[in-house]
Length: 528
Image (cartoon, rainbow, N blue to C red; front, side, top):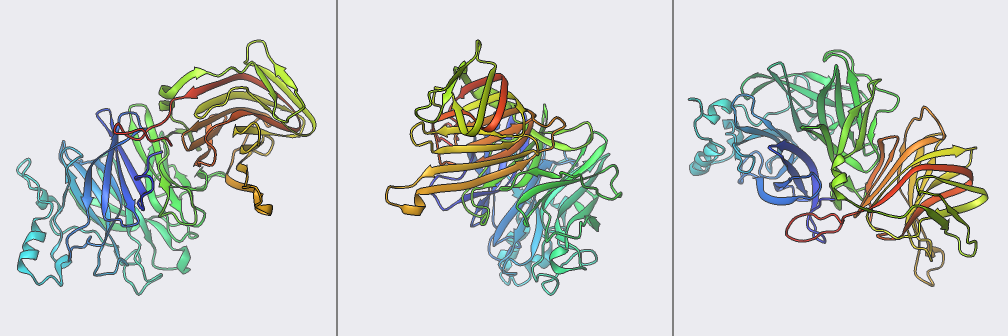
């Protein structure tokens, strides 16, 4: 899990990742100040090294002198070897109530220059020297007999167009939404989409995905909203991709802190929803896409506290984005985890977790086990304790009883993680269960629901399960689809096994492996 310095007041915010020449480039916000856009690099997409910060807030009087918000980095389609970063800025003059979109350039992804701003952005600046310096901000070297400032002259920052969107403080929430840019191009035509709000309708139902067309290099013209569901306050951090012959629009919703998506067969046709359009479970937010040589990767940040997404955020490892045969989007485990797999843990025998029962089940080769509990709760665990691991198995449930997994469980206190699996209805619920200090009375039983996820099974009772515990990162997959993805540090080590409650369960193709401890950079080891 990538994060800001452990124990500091800073936290990672919205992310954007770009893959180039074998290197993943992560650009992210730093909360709560929002005063710069940070930059980190990785060769494997899991452990990261911080490098030179990309952008800082502007000097006093600039349109972006208060805060920097979500950005998007793409190759410049108009100049080979150059990159563009569209980003959100807020000004002190507006007290941060009006959002605008700016542009910065880079030739190497490490050194960035802001594009020049148009003159009316300098209103109120009476110092001629300040005006002169502001005009020079972002000027790039000539290229192809064309200057960067000519590309963007009198265009930036982009603002919400009042013909289509809320654009003044007198409208709606008295706070202008125009942020989280994302650049999309197809057949030589470029588009910017961003989070905005239409002008009419119930105030907290105006959230939409705004659309701006690139009419000439670095100049954009506002158009009517790409999508307005008519139910959400905002659609944050939108993404637009074409996957095979279908278009997909992905956005994050503050209402339930989930990432959802819509689809259409042609831009201009209505956007449709599937019965299951939740891409990530609650707590995961601000998803972004990048493409490497193996396909699409999905990135986001995770909030340990979903009531306040400005503190204690982390960036989990990415997921691979897939499309099912019937058109639904699914996230699968990042194949980069394979590089972290170590020796196998013996799975030939399991024993009862309950003291005094002494029940043991063994198989010849460790790949097949048959477990049964006639009535009450029974957990059957492998002998060896582990910290970081990957567990895989095929489940076949007989009857209508309960089953699940336990992991990082203390053999004496039974404190640990309990993962309930309803293989008939398709529900996964992860909980932590631990014992409080002696004498704490009713507070001694410390029970916490961490995350829930859902899936649809074409063959109820049968499942291909995978569980990864990798530092503080926990990921559970069902039939190849990532159902749970979160961070928690309640327990770091213990035994793993299967629990049953009035159930008969067959396990086949069982495998359990240690994983190397994750680290954040080459400077020092950071677990979790």
